[in-house]
Length: 555
Image (tube, rainbow, N blue to C red; front, side, top):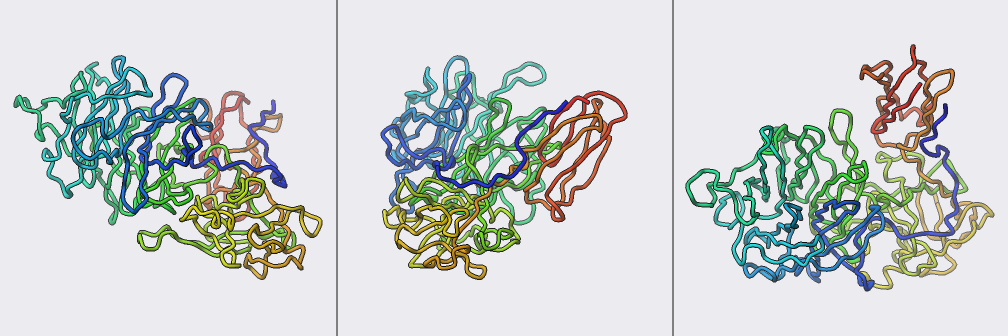
């Protein structure tokens, strides 16, 4: 019996049709106006995902967020603008421009929008509809007053997240967790309009708040902000932003109230934003993580953009480090190789995402070779032209928002940090049939007659006299999860090409009882082609696992 999971072979493609990148997913409102938004918080209601985020309207390097926005999707790819469910001005206290991170929860027939305004307090809005409008549920009061906590910083009462569950005795608990530098947890009453008086002193105040801790953090790693609680099986996950500029990490616990044990870093500091904010949900059998970047034109840590990727777990519940990704859930990664030497590929110079605000945005030169230390730097996405939709732009996948750019007749990888027409045009190229008769060639939109060309090991602009060096083959990057699994009389087979970043990957097969019946270490730096066969001693159900890929099959 043969079962094809997905196509295996890399296909050479000439991208005569391009589409906009999937990430960021929040780009505009219902009128087509550009939208910046950060601090994503997602919730699943029936067959729909609703995404709430703070509207970044700042024109300076400071937050200005007058309201929250709502988007919805039934497939995680196409997103519908649902409007403004709530404004900062709907709450009489604090600033009308501080619609900071919040989260919506459904409880007893109503929707509750837990929010904060900078660190002037935490409160909640209520609505009969998921999309609002929400009104102040506390009539000018607050769930948490900032003087109730006395932490390491004066802005520690931000970023609320809520978790509702029944304990082993069937008793319902409604937890609210929040913090910056310090991490706090408390319980909510059934009306969702007050903390519980847990110390029974007949006063609701800081005495009813508990500080949470993440244990075993490595030296140099500290909790910053943006907690998000998630549960998988019996294990609780606490996702959060750590350090500055912010990375994303996770910790785990057997109890929602902790203590939590540090699990590891899952995302480095972004290439275009000083902050980040996780939101994790399950939808249609998969787990997704939302985060934000400054990847859009004129984007930054104060004009952010929401993105989403699938979140994958190892068998032991751990999560590997992954890159922010321009392709998201629906884009296509490609390699770009010159016809003059198809064994090489374009890649951008490596740069760590800096923690120095004065160094943003960063940039790099573009090279061509058969090796780079960071294999993800080989990956590109060809999208609709930034300066003309009839042409194309070439974006780095792992440095989202950074494009191959004609910068004063030199080719560089740059971020669009001014959103001007001239910058967009400098990032746009006219795609032609290859000058040498093979592949494609890319002519600069701003300097007609000049083509992207590989000279030595650099990508430059030339008149295209070396036609093979100015012609390129575009090759789709195989997804490591796109593998062919099948059985025949010879056994169970796994075939395909692996393109992950790790140099060695475990491959093993488990029988129906969960026992490992075969185990091997695949050395991906020797070859990335898989041609594996295992013949079981008996018929039955088996599970084949390769890295993050797992599939059940009957033999």
